[in-house]
Amino acid sequence: MDKIINRVKKSPLITIDIKEYYQEGKRDKINFSSFLEDDILIEKKFRENLKNYNWNQFKNSFVYVVLEEDIIVPSWAFILISHYLSNSCKNYVFGDRKNLEEKLYLEKINNIDFQSFKGKKVIIKGCSEIPYFEYVYFELTKKLSQVVFSLMYGEPCSTVPIFKNKISK
Image (cartoon, rainbow, N blue to C red; front, side):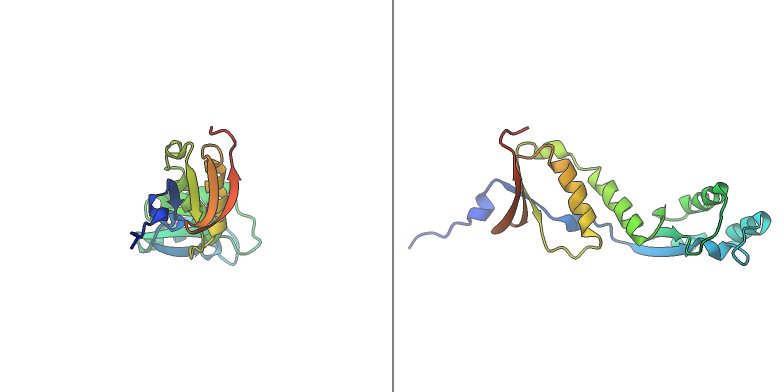
């Protein structure tokens, strides 16, 4: 009887699982207007509200700050909230949850040594359960397209070809 050989395991394909780029941790939302008085920024009261706010609750969180109402806010007010957040949470962004996730993904992606993929055959694993996976696909493809020999999507046993460079870069 012939020995069963796992050809997928022996292949030179490199599989990237995008779940590795998701940063685990609590996500918290802050509504900018919660520091205002009747949707009006009164500087003295605004500063007092920020000073007395429990920023420690975000110690182990990723925070996104939203401005849900159509309110005119001076630029310095964003800087002040950013200052308080810079001392109290893992990371933060002004924008919605999607903006936060994109920032966190990009930080992880920017730490990849893409030259290690130079001339290789790469598969970006499919069927991920992470939020906003489309962003990760776009950013990885942007970087990988510059160095890989070929890029595929899916699982090693059944891939969808994305592109193949005729000459390895």
